[in-house]
Amino acid sequence: MVLRPLATRVPKEIEQEIRDIMDLLRVEKAQAVRMILEIGISEWRKRTALDLLRQGEVTFAKAAKLAKLDVWDFADLV
View 1 (cartoon, helix red, strand yellow):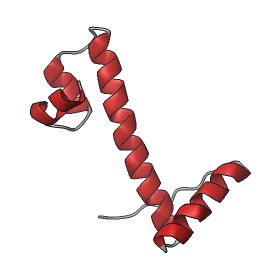
View 2 (cartoon, rainbow, N blue to C red; view 1 turned 30 degrees about the vertical axis):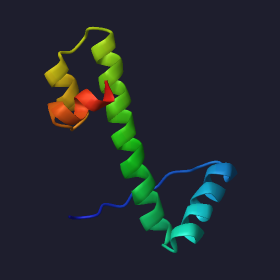
View 3 (cartoon, rainbow, N blue to C red; view 1 turned 90 degrees about the horizontal axis):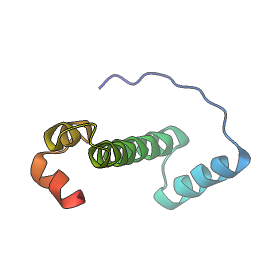
View 4 (tube, one colour; view 1 turned 120 degrees about the vertical axis):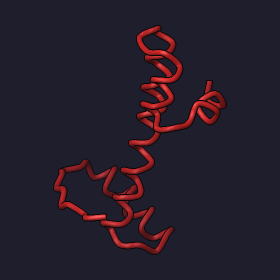
């Protein structure tokens, strides 16, 4: 996997959260931020898929695909 640089500004509170995670996991800042982003994106996909499914805007299969889950794992969320 090729890693691309990403720069952003965050409030002090979020910076402290990142530092806490770095200390807890004993990882560098870049690795901590990557882990947080991966978890956040995964959760965002699941929530968005569930919201769209509830609103009737997508089918169950499309919602599962948006969540990047197979239909059986997505069924566990519902």
